[in-house]
Length: 242
Image (cartoon, rainbow, N blue to C red):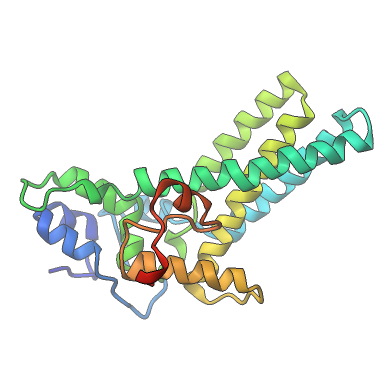
């Protein structure tokens, strides 16, 4: 059905809905970790690739800078510690985990809404495939997993602009937690797919959930860093089905 030596997006556009849904639900293994081309324009295709460590190099200093500014804006050390526990924890443990869940479920898996018997919209299917579903088909493509760097930079610029106006320790810590959560998400996602070592049993639990999402049912278990929103929103897999 597909020739992986040629750009994939033009081929996806020609598929029927039934063919497309069958294609994206079956993972394929290829030896090369940079072995596919999505777009016909090679320059654009290269531009859409991104690595994890460049994001870390840019965003981790921003996270530390936000925390340092929050310390400066706090009236006392006790206020800083209290705000850190509450707002940094909320930004990382609640807001980021909901962000990843919402986008993963509602924006990146729009193929679950397709009618296999309906006439295919090639542009729609190509959009779904280029955003995320190529990762479900070719899971070991190193430069096509993490979040787009440009989105990070735009968000960071907006944060800096907002902070310059509000100068609020709580906001700074909340944003720092959100950014660190996004880095943790990308790091864990990369670790799941490339066998990066982590000695924590919880990591293995989340990796097992994520692999089920890939290999068994991509309409369940959208959480990558935490399962909390799957539990709340009813997309967890019940124990007897495991």
